[in-house]
Image 1 (cartoon, rainbow, N blue to C red):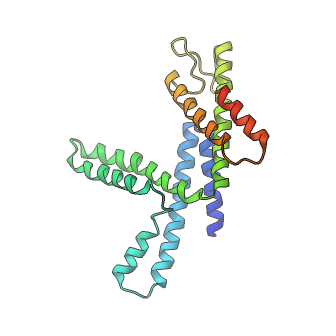
Image 2 (cartoon, helix red, strand yellow):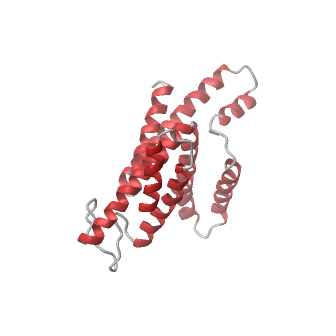
Image 3 (cartoon, helix red, strand yellow):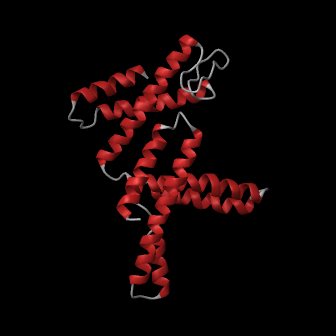
Length: 212
């Protein structure tokens, strides 16, 4: 598979994941797994090609092979790498090594790889703005769903009812809904002050922040 096609497919998968965050856990798991799998396939292909093209010692070839998996460098890389390393070594001092190892490889490592996929895929400011806008649209849909639930007693997406007389929209508890929407208030305000050429978009972003 050509690199540009897999890269585009990874972008599509991440967009689906971000839009479906409040809607479907199954879709989130499927898109994350597929995006990470394609990203690893790309990295292994590049590393394999570089490994055979280099005219140097086996040790240097191995170092070059591993460097292909670093992803795009940003300031948060080092502390996150340190955090993952600490989590890995903590497995060996855990009271239950099996459970700790399972949690590390299927949760911590999974989301760390997702972080690498995201920063390696969305490098351009235009793409980052698109992702933020897509996430904001999803949040507005959830806000409308929550209002619908408030007046009719159930949400129109997953048909969830009130939780202890409080609205939840598609989430299992009111606190999850509040935490999700609050984060998008800051995102929408931040985007409204960015360099959008279209004033209508700026207006909609500010209105969205007030609505949320």
